Length: 494
Length: 71
Image (cartoon, rainbow over all chains, first blue to last red; front, top):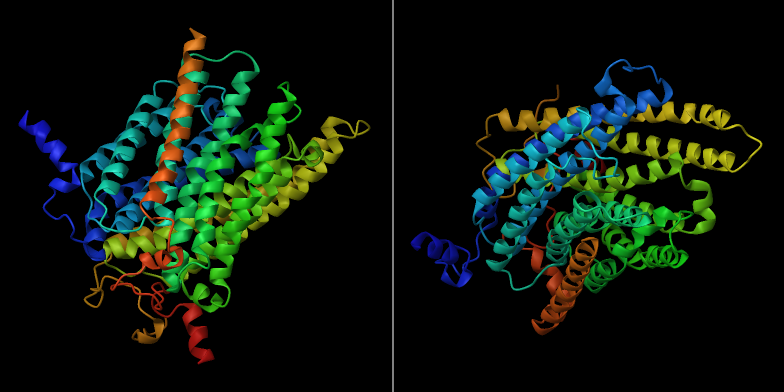
């Protein structure tokens, strides 16, 4: 009984001995070091795995015989494993790592109950591994974004619940007077994801709904994984790192709050636009289209805020690894969101549905926006956790240029190819196989983009491993490790 | 049995909606939505103060070379 009362006391901020005491940033960083590094390590593992599977799937689209004799390397499996490794492996691990560091810092409190996060990290990644192996073994479900076999999902849900509980405990222990807009986004994300995931599991896997309701629930879930899980975490990071690194407040804090509440109001209606032309009631589609267009409000608000904060400070952005990636991600967010709203209009959707244009759009969102912001966040967080500088400017530059040019090539190539594909598919005079053959040059450009992106991921991995293994310099002792280049001793050029 | 899951999903959706409304009410009553421009400075601390950039390329990065040339 005493252990129960001890636990209750440990999650009660009024019973805490250090109530009212704001922790120093360095103390907070030190307290979050192990769990954040574990999540980052897992994210990197899945990033590399997901990229290899992506490349195999991409090559198969223009060379179908490539690795075609191995059962678990057929396109249907490889593409599905890629999707799930990057969503649940890379992006979710990276998002949780950034979210928990941000939450501890913004609450100005040291990590409480870090063991919960360790257990969550192990459960989550064992669940993802079991899910991917299950898909390779042929147990995968034919539900987009929910392909993991049923035996893997309880682990994910348990891990997620633990992370959410930790988030609430940390918020209860906050020593900051104000709840910054990033905290709003993070708290909302930690509430929203278990909601959409559990409802989708119940209505699609445990007790499948009948008929087209399955498709409605499926796309409500799949779109909201982006909009109510990854988007809030990405925006939380952008709203923190852009003003933080520049050393000036966000352009209009009022607009940021407006952006949060309008996103909360409109986003979860929008997923239905994936079913335009499908056998669902027209009013449902119309409601989804209206919500998609209403999303222009939070997107414009966010765009004004991010970009007006950066205007006049481009030199500082260029000198910061964090901001290069985060600002690239913020620009991608504006572009991909406005593009998404336009794609929900029936007239444009007529040409883009079932084409590579949609694939390009999805990758601009998950890579150009979310992944780039995660990279930028890591460039800020890891030196503060490890108390070390990044080992090589060149590797950071290689990572930035390959990732940014790679995703630009990917997006431009597939968007053009997709539009041509859509227009040709709507022309009954063009045989379907001719339409397929006409997409091949654009699919090749995608594989080239994938190879470029892989180089960047390898450079980033080498940077992280090198940084962890290298000894700490005696100069690197301050809480903020990155100093102005003018204040640094010049190193001999090699 | 199917109706039971629809009912559960509907109740959960209602709970989420009311949680959002409650959060907005809490924010208003706690003064979280007042004096917003001053609150935007809450991310700065005495260790990482306003007016100071807090992230640079390490060592002699290409960008820092350029900034030195400009000076």
